[in-house]
Image (cartoon, rainbow, N blue to C red; front, side, top):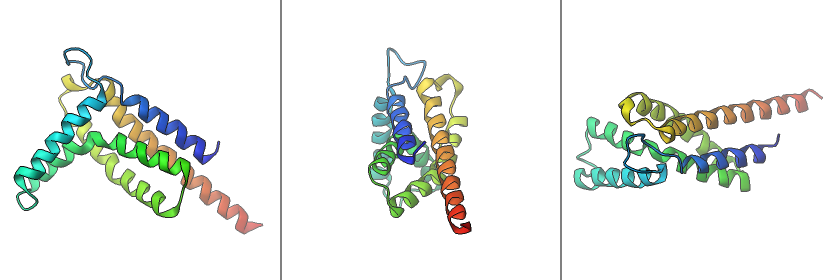
Length: 152
């Protein structure tokens, strides 16, 4: 399977997860994308009212926890860009973000009350983990391809 096809499939799955319900307790249907908008507003409130100098360690952790739902839209955008045209700088940025966002996503997953964990909540962590696995497969296959070319 080609790299572009894997990225398109992953981006499609990420897009679908944006429409899953975030919390099972919500009155009615609260899709993940609406929750992400609400969380982004809270993160901006922290940044604006506490300021850059006023963000202490507890606020940095809270800021990171609040921004962790943004991992799927961010990775979705980067996957679409990489599927369209892949260049070294963008791939390195994508890999760096995967390394940073995977632990953050799983940290939030296990530090959120189980009552608030809906399908969209689990899909967020699962899709980020799948993105890491796909990237590992792509890196390993590229390295194996280089070693075979060098050997012949």
